[in-house]
Length: 71
Image (tube, rainbow, N blue to C red):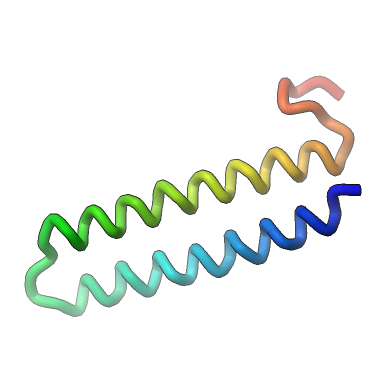
């Protein structure tokens, strides 16, 4: 039931991780990393954390586990 959603969320997580990685790499190539760049990276990591948390919840649901750890 949740396999399609799980596949989509996993794909989004992978793509978002690639975007965050690329942004960090770009920032490291510049001589000065200012507060705006750091905020962009922090927001990207935060968003990635939300996506991976969603993936974990969907995975639990697809295995028949509740989010409270009960089977």
